[in-house]
Image (cartoon, rainbow, N blue to C red):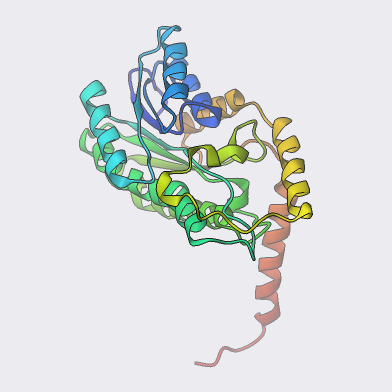
Length: 281
């Protein structure tokens, strides 16, 4: 999609952070953008800010952990812009609790937002991109945690799922003129550590077990690292470039590359251990 001007994008989690960075970069490239978010006040502010730059944008409030609300957001997008060329499944929540602190609600909320909403977004918007025959792009936000899991929590599991989904879809949709990219950001200045501010009522009262001092210290350290992370506006520009050039993977920096290489080395070592053995059939 070398020429983005005049195309239409739908972006979830677009009121702040990476989502707003992407919305801004695309709007500056002449893309019409529907910003979708669960936070009405933040969404209104983001839309007003972009409209002040003469961008052709609109906003729709939706809890994308509910498929019906995502469908209504798609309907609103078509009513406003007629067509959709770019889908950005960006909304995400952190947490889920580490081993020993899990709750069913934590897993369900995290998987609903981070993985199921991505699946639903593709199911809903994929046919809309196909039907106009102009091609398009699907970008889904995973995380570097979708390639290197530091724990077995719901967040990492959901992000591995987004990576696997994107890699498979890239092969499936190439022949239909739809590119697929997966965004695996490292530390970016977002509100991911405060995701619970948007916890739906149906999941309230099912918090994980109390945190230990060690866990609290780890969270404080992560907050500090995120505060010094990459600018979301820079990430938005990377995503714009990725859409124009159909990048399969989008990284925000090389900080975690050694850990990815370590993972690959461990996988290869597993094959090396059985390389000279004859499998029993």
